Length: 84
Image 1 (tube, one colour):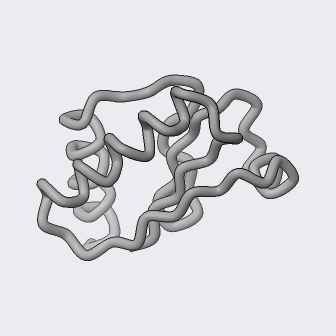
Image 2: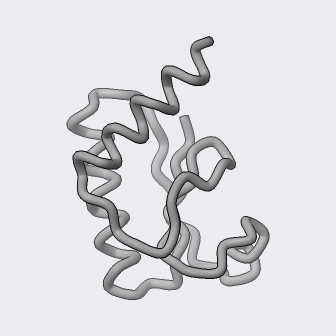
């Protein structure tokens, strides 16, 4: 699983990156967490507000910083959808 945090480096973007890394660690899954700061690459996802969270090239949330528990639930939901 590849997880991307889209954001130009603001405080919210850094917080989302930290929350995402914590959620991955607590979930015990194998995932690569990447930070995307290039605005042209961010725009390719058609995200108009950052930060944004992308699982396997699908935007799952944008414009806010979810709690670690919410990210863990999003990860679990994504895993369940891709297993079927």
